Image 1 (cartoon, one colour):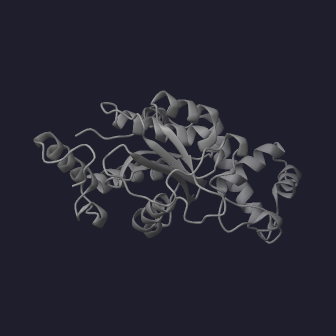
Image 2 (image 1 turned 30 degrees about the horizontal axis):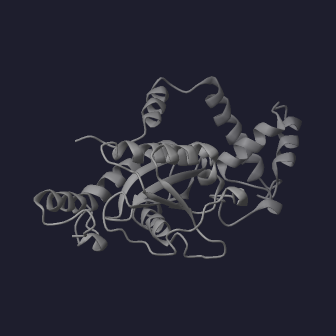
Image 3 (image 1 turned 180 degrees about the vertical axis):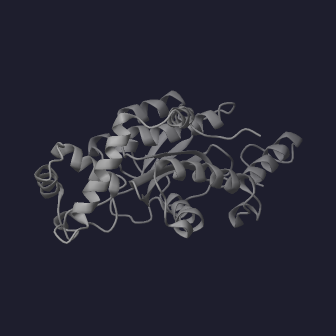
Length: 287
């Protein structure tokens, strides 16, 4: 059995085994001090980065303001004037570079690699917000790509895409419709170029349509409900990544899915290919 996970995740885990760096150690100590100030009677959970920075330096703890800002983001805390109920997952991309919505809320496919949907969700941890990107094939609802990171840069979505392409490396992706929201991660030049290399077609949800990527959002909700919410005490990116890897394998290979005829998505795909090989189906048929 071969586990499907990003190569970057493997080297990240190996590096972590060598022990924390000096920066990691200092960051951990500074986070403790930041939380002491922010959660103290003086801070009252309303201090922003500037006031915490001033208080730490007044205590003789020399630290740059941008470092305090970075660590506060990791901790998921903010000043009273900057609070929000949930972190942003995507920001709108350049309107000029956005393709059309080719799915028009029709989230079905007659065969594998006809339509993929992609989205990013978030996980609150003790170390700050962590983000998970998924790519799902709409035919059997199989997760073909994923990645976990502590940032929202384009690399997060691109790593998930690279996994999906690797998983489907023996199959032709020409004509595949890749659908996402309007976020900058998915409209980035590198992301578009990678899809172009596979001759895939980009599709982006329409503005103001809350259901423009409903299938991907449904997967995110399932991920939260089955894996993330029951634990509710995640430490950081490492344990979320390992747990997600285990959940994705279970979801694809063991969890029955009503959409896939009450069988795991991977098995549903395998039945399709067997029927195709036997001549019981044509490439345009669905089991």
